[in-house]
Length: 122
Image (cartoon, rainbow, N blue to C red; front, side, top):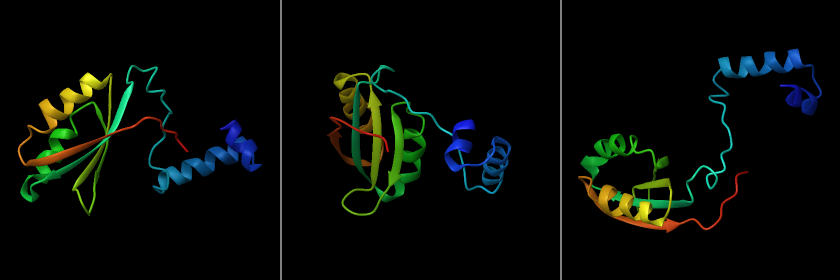
């Protein structure tokens, strides 16, 4: 809070009050941290696009939400139905995730894997 207060030129008490109000009003919905995925043992990251049968979307969503490798899920319109951001220990773990788990789920029509070479958080 001290850094925030200094950046916006207000007192710490005022910064606490403003942040508390933004949380209460639902403007701020969560607080987060930045993780060095490489150091955390998750050296391989990829986006996986998935096409699913229309009736299978809810079961697919519920199943992938329990997979620890899946960091983000987006239902999208266009060429594919779902985009997943996944993080695994290595390429072999990514291969097992795609071929042995995702492609075996009921309703999955196809997947496409896009390996991430480098990424940067804003």
